[in-house]
Amino acid sequence: MNWFIRFLTSSIGQKILMSLTGIFLILFLTVHLIGNLQLLAGDGGESFNLYADFMGHNPLIQFISIGNFSFIFLHAILGLLLWRTNKAAKGSTYAVKATKSSSYSSRNMAWFGIIIFVFLVLHLSNFWFKAKWPGLVDPVMYGDVEVKNLYSLVEVKFSSLPYVIFYLVSMIVVGLHLSHGFQSAFQTLGLNHKKYTPFIKGLGTAYSILVPLGFAIIPLWMYAKYAFNL
Ligand code: HEM
Image (cartoon, rainbow, N blue to C red; front, side, top):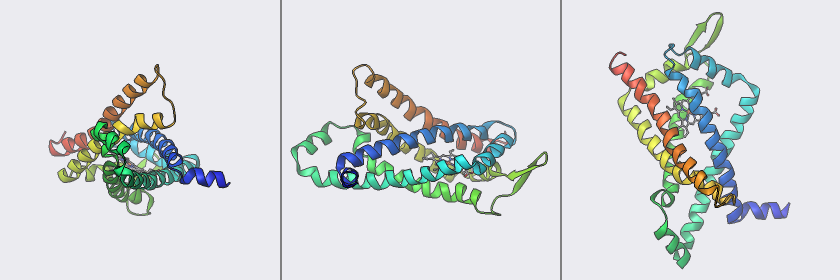
């Protein structure tokens, strides 16, 4: 047990946990985006509301959701700890060299993470909390099934231009965080290979552009629908 605690409190152990939780969150983001794209289905929110209701009641999804929140928390705490360790090591020649040759994204990972955390607090209080707390979202009927009308909640939020701009800026930050985080996670786990590394890098770049873009299209489209009566 001692070796396990030593591993978790060591810098390499923390980096490995950062990578594993990061990869889990990358998978979560993909599923979340696919689910949210149903907001654009043009069916008045029926498919999105039924999907959200299923996700909100399925026991396996509820279990994964607890893991999701724990991993977000762990990822954020470990990120801050590693940031502090790296700052403390800044005096060493190695750290100075690494800083000079590193990319804009890699140098600002902690700041991007902090901005994403602030985004998440607002995002969860506006959507997740309202979805979970009884009586805060109007119900809607599909046949004889009654579900919460989360679509209309999202629609109201994205009819505010400042809110839409806040989402767009946050998605740029998510993209920057992912552009370094994706390949860095695989590198930390030792999945470095002449043959596969360029593929992982390419996949990371594509992912960090396409996923935030997919998220950004939702508020943009919903605002356009509201502003131009589409
Ligand atoms: C246009 C963009 C987005 C929309 C419309 C959206 C919408 C929602 C909604 C409606 C919920 C509540 C669902 C429910 O609990 O029934 C939710 C939950 C959540 N969202 Fe988003 N989301 C967006 C982007 C993001 C992004 C970029 C992130 C992360 C960086 C994120 C992280 C989360 C998390 C962690 C939850 C809680 C999930 C859980 O219950 O495990 N969302 N989102």
